[in-house]
Length: 252
Image (tube, rainbow, N blue to C red; front, side, top):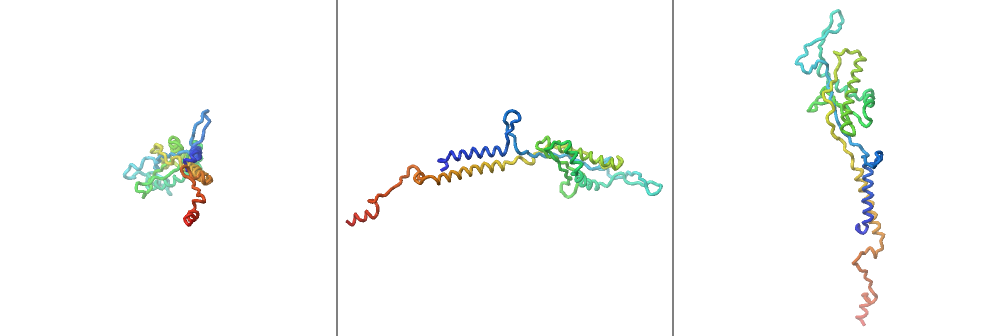
């Protein structure tokens, strides 16, 4: 049956292929010659790493024996440890992730980044996932590896610039500021969301089902004599060959 209506089926294949192609790509005539460009972008991911610490690298010391003088209640100054509690930086990392999502940082990011990219800060956890480290992953997403890496680096720098601006406005002395250090610039990007081919496949199958269904409809609309096909004869019994005529001859 499909072979008899092979023209209908062939048209279904052609139409389905065209629908699948146009749903996956568009024709670009900007360069003077037709070219196909994908309708949907891939999503690439890169990330830079930020370290929340303070000047003097307290993480390299076994003991915190250094002190600094601050104004006390009386005439005598008060001595306090120079370095803060290491556990405090993990909490600051969690807080800074939320600050990096704020409007000020996003506005500064948009002013320098291409419109097709975005970023997402994320706190770094230990290998067993049970604790938070004083580090931040600044993830960048983009339609290409280069743009994803640029997004990660721009987001990291804009957050560091925002934090420094807030510290200056608060008149915090440099030796008492929390420091956010870039320990690793954007790593080579990897693709995390390829272009979807679900829609092209669906449209192709839909066109094929429509063409095959049309072939069945046309087959059912054909006259019964033509539908019997070649090599099959229609047998018409004459009145003489009927069982009643044969029985009458024997009786006579």
